[in-house]
Image (cartoon, rainbow, N blue to C red):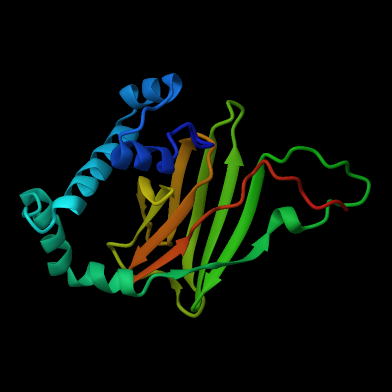
Amino acid sequence: MESRIGHIALVSLFERARLNTELDGSAQAHLNSCHLCRGRLDWMQVAAGLGVRELSYDPPQPVMEAVLRLGRDSSRLKQLRNAVVALLTFDSFKQPTPAGIRSTEASSRQMKFEIHGVEIGVLMRLSEDRKLSLAGQVLEKLSGPIQDPAARVDLVIEGDRIMTSSLSPWGEFVFPDVPKARYGLQVYFLDRMLQIPSLPSIDEQRSPG
């Protein structure tokens, strides 16, 4: 079983790791060639093995080191504690098509998300070869661009980071020419993390005039 973006569904990988079920031919072929799905399966198999033997065995050293690194990173823990979901407040697809103009497939979509005095503007643009470009800007409504040289935006799919863009001095970020998929965004700055779990698709129909 595969998800909408071509990767094996997480529930299928979980059943494979926990119950040792067999994948169908196309899924197995995908697993053999996909580093992301193999990495997910490896992690699930380790977790499943630890679950039944946790009283008898210590966890692998790399796992312990990763947990300890997270525990020592107080700024990262603060970001996770302060993670909030930004709300959609503007969508160009929700604006009526001007009278006399027939609705056609749009090549771009503008959105704005807001939370706790922060605005995240997002522009999705579809190129001629059907690749997707995502660009945007993160602003504090009262003071302008985010003042944090380490600020960044992660492009994610189902919680997995695909790409990262640092913020420019004007709060801008860009992800050029990525495959069409259902993406989310995670914005990190200071001790905060803002989430847009799932961006609307550019293939949805615009509101009629």
